[in-house]
Every structure is written in structure tokens, then in C-alpha cells.
Image (tube, rainbow, N blue to C red; front, side):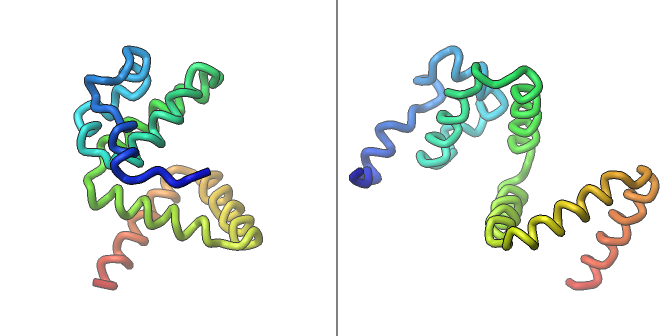
Length: 129
């Protein structure tokens, strides 16, 4: 398959007003930022929206929740999230397994203990500045 030139990508990345009613409903949390999203990013969102009707209701809800959370992030927070995602993709399967176990341990802690850990982490990060 030939790579699409950048100009071709721009032509296939519609503006918000060019989206179908269904696409606007699914991608609603992104409405205010849509026309500032890079064309490649719009294409990725459209691809996910295309599969949205086939998702089970709980997966649709999770998708909507995460999209709302993403839309509320600042550009700096979005870049930090992208960087964390890139780093996670570089982990070995064993490192991912260990990380998953640690996350499950954390999730099983009482809320007050998780709050203590979050505060401790924030305090340590401030000292690193």
C-alpha cells in the first residue's frame, strides 16, 4: 500500500461541520477541539467512532468517559499522557506483567491508603524539581 501524502490526509480529515450526525454524537466531547486536532489524530478518532455502534454498552460508556477525560486535559497533560503511553509500549512482556500486578495491588488498597500514596508521590516529585 502506498503512503498517503500529507495533502491527501488533510483532505480525508473532515472538519467538525463535515462530520455525520452519528460521528458528532459519538465524538461529542471533542467538539470544541476537533478542528485543532492534527489530521492524523482526527483519522484515528474517526476509526474508533466507526466501531462504536458495534461495542457493547459498557465499552461504549468507558469510551465516552475516557474521551471526556481526554478533552479536559491541557495540551501539556495530553503530551505527558502520550509520553507515558510510548514508554509503556516499550516495556517487555515481563515488565508489563509486573506493572499490571503492582497496579492490581494498588487498586485493592483501601481508598485512604491510596490517597496517602498519591500524596507521598506528589511530595517526592516536587523535591525532584
